[in-house]
Length: 139
Length: 139
Length: 139
Length: 139
Image (cartoon, rainbow over all chains, first blue to last red; front, side, top):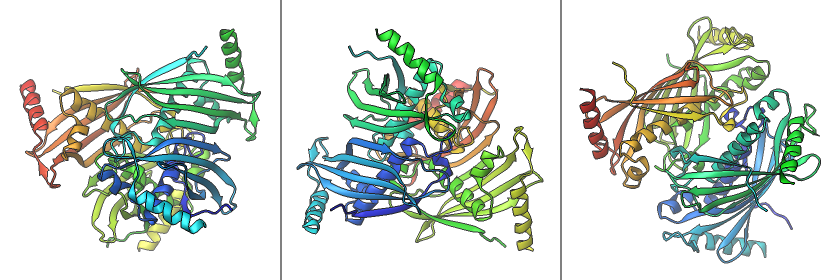
């Protein structure tokens, strides 16, 4: 059963819109990233702290389906649902909904991993602990 | 036979790097977009002019495979190859290579369409003419 | 007596930080612009609507004093106080404070004007009405 | 006698334009920063390398006079002239000119300093050596 672990509400900022008067394509990746990092932080995993310890969470693949455009003044919600893909890979299933009508704006799947100080995929303790909690909750 | 229609050479700018010291994920979409627009302009299709005439070229789907990170000071090449997907849809197959070693950095496929003044998909004259030329060339 | 007309609370997003681990200089201008536009909207002046009517609010001069850096995870407040400089020019005195300690992060003064459809400075009705209200309130 | 030490030629990218169809105000700071960093690198001072050694070049004050807007497709030149302000402070006098007509787009003065690992202003060896060379040249 589909269940959103986390949702963040944001507002379009005018500088995020391009000459077509709509939010520029690349900006949605910013929205998605910000929601992922806020979700991780709410679960005790701090992207910035990991980066300082030279554990880098990186994106391996992004699939983004653009359904509708956001415009100046639009409020929207970004959702985050985490899935374990393999021992070292995880995926974030994310959606963006315009508010208040909840029209779907974007669906995305972001696959990532953690790279250790040597630049190789590693198991981040924080992420592993997070998976344990997520699994436990979904039983 | 794979054949790149267009290639643009760029340089990483320091403000494009994030706290991990690497180019932020979303920035690659900027690179890809800039190369697409330069390619289109070289073929007589001006994104800005179309926008002023209320014909908006929009992205429907983006698939991005991140192979390696670019860093401060890196030079790189962005390639563009156009494909017609259906009467109203087109796809840009794009790659980013680090220079001078040509290590693959990112592979992407960006599917788009043109929306007319009424917000519905339409056949843009410039794009159609471009497909004729591309087809002709590939025979 | 100094009196802040408007204040907006925001959160640093990780993609706004650069390789030094601090918010990049240019990003503060984004914060200031967003707060100005939200302030104007709260007063019935919509930047996007004006742009569609070809009345462009533009910045003529920006003075920015950087006192301290914001970092990943920081909450902050952006203030806006409007001043009429001349018949056609207005200035926004703005500050950014880190929260909760209210350490001053940035002080800025942004001078602007409205350009009409012919590209020349003009009196925007909305802005003029806003000045009347602001003056009235400050008596 | 006014003399530009360094000039960089760039092209407006469409994603840098906002809904008014002109380059967004904050983006000019990106242009100025990129030109400063390229200038410094041409003089043997690498911003990224310094950041890794925890010597952070930071902006203390920015004064920006916007004379004219850049638009989609515009080519432009960013100039950099370095001045020593005090033992620990330096200023970059910068201009942006549209090409090929050399219309002035922006004049800026960016004052900065180097912060050492302890977060306090320090004399960066690279910058000091640079001042010696600059002074020598200007005699």
